[in-house]
Length: 220
Image 1: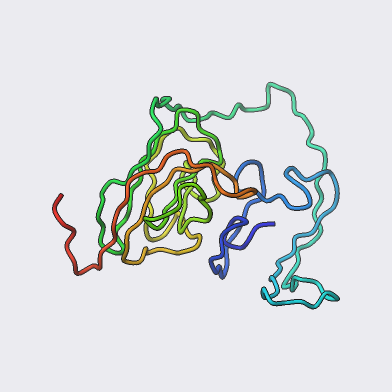
Image 2: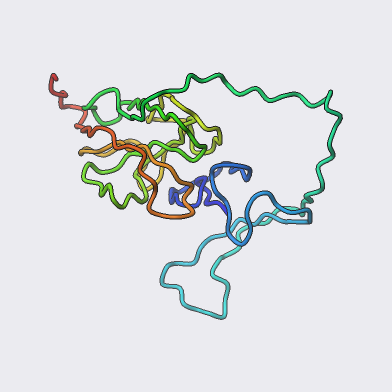
């Protein structure tokens, strides 16, 4: 399963869109894990019952809609000459593990650009924004996050990148949504797919502040 906002840990309200079940992140495992076995399946759109729902004689989910039945068959293997090779983008292997924002002060609504580097990246590495006093020994759900490859749905391990938290795509919503409220925050580089908590902390980055639009950031 995946929540409508795109993974198993987000809680943002989504009126329409699409989610992708596949290899890599986001993790969609529950009673089974990817890939699906050969067989016939249906997709259901469900709604969770409220947390105080205790009627044990009824299902904990409310069915809203369902798809037509679809089939997962065995993948035929074409001759080698007809199978194009997938080209991965060339990346220079970084030597340092680091994450930082482009500034330490922003006005509310300003884009926040985050740069990171990972010598041995994995597909479940992600950059996340937390309150400035986050407990680094017990890192759990962030306010906002993006995987290293640039969104909440991509699955490519990425050694270094510049990610932009801002209005529009990509969606970075988790416990909070854009724009960040006025306050102090910290950027972290984490590893994990949400199947177990706390997340593995790769490196803690700098703190930064968000000021009201009318206030000027101090000159550093």
